[in-house]
Image: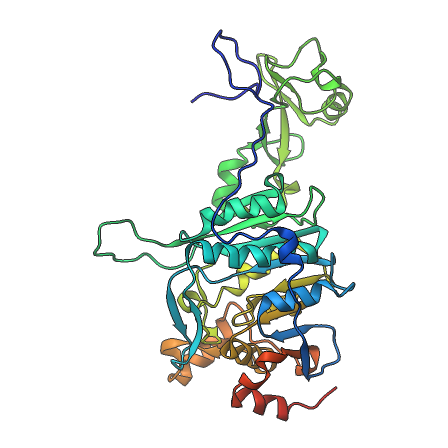
Length: 434
């Protein structure tokens, strides 16, 4: 396998393509508005339905108009640290909740879908803090189209990861293709300076023994050996001679010669019998195994978790926990404008973040209110088996939420006010105002 050393030099005599051309690519389609047109769209007029004591906000209505309204709020514009959205996937389907009630439709496709989501992304960028992050959850239907749109809206340089998630157990397909068990999360930031708490998973004994194969005789500490050089030439200190050696061709020292001297004095450099220096990396200084961009452990709630809301497409709460802990701090604003069953809001509240949730489905709003006030319910085969329910609740990966209703305020965009179903109206009547 070829190893890249220089990104710009070629030792042969062939003509190379120019490196100073623009790499920006945009997606063109009928009905594409300018950013100015989108930002000039009218905002929602909202009505207070129920008031709590905290700043958390739940909105019922069209998220485009509500996002335009939130953009006018100086407490939110440019202040949201983290956005996670799980919009419709352009499946051309209607989704129903566990009680067979229509929850939402996903009938947009093609250019209409792209522009629908792009309009909201442009407004979301206005709300995102300069050191904020956005995670967009999609599948193969539109993820590749929306990657170009995300590059356009947030800048290709601010693309961080294309995360692949295993969403379900293996499928026994009868048609001629591979089982579809993955979907994707596009992770972008607003700038190079963003909140980041690197996530780790714990070492297993077997994995640690394989990676940290050496024992330091003087201390008994486990360690592994890694190179002290890195690809690319440098003209500064890291490109200079150390101990009579220059870095290998096309490479540079990872540390300055002075720093390497300090490391060697502390016994942190291993010298091979042939005089080749390598750095010792100690197991007891490792925080764990750094998380990569393939996530296998966060299958959909209906496939994995014991307790759910029953809302379709409900996402795994531990996945949201990872995202929220990685890309925000306590007290930060977290926003989900396709709130669905409220997983993002629920986890954000448990992690002591402030949140804003929006959805235009009465089923979604009902599921969120139920979840935030009474917690989750046993799923599937567990519903009618009390002895298993008791055990399952003890083993549940995510416990029911003990959140009192006073921790949020509910608003409705005025055109939706008359469409709130009787169950939600009853909930609102039963809750004491703060």
